[in-house]
Length: 143
Image 1 (tube, rainbow, N blue to C red):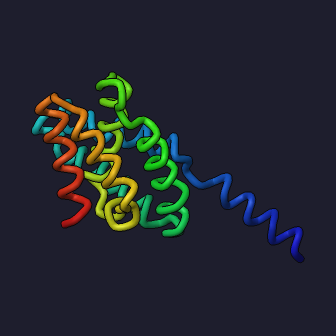
Image 2 (cartoon, rainbow, N blue to C red; image 1 turned 30 degrees about the horizontal axis):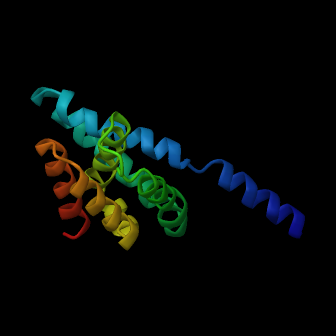
């Protein structure tokens, strides 16, 4: 009984998306907003809806603690003490894709560490576009 139940739990977890997959999906979502033409906006909306639907289908604790929690911890560890790098911009793009296009991510991922990390990034960033992106993420988190 218990061993079979553990085996089922392990199998379910192995079928779950990883934080890396969510990060990569965030990058795709963020890049789709700038590269998809107006004619393909239905495709973009379907992509966003599919991502949000996928997050909704997962256990809320897994989304908030494992997927988004791990990304927040990684983002926080990247805090730009020594200047703004391409890695910072890539991390910001992934978060933009995740939080700008998924109400579920906003609901389950909004946290003090995420807001603190975004505020730290904001204070170290002089690029107007990147600062606008951070402000948009924060806006979506609290709508």
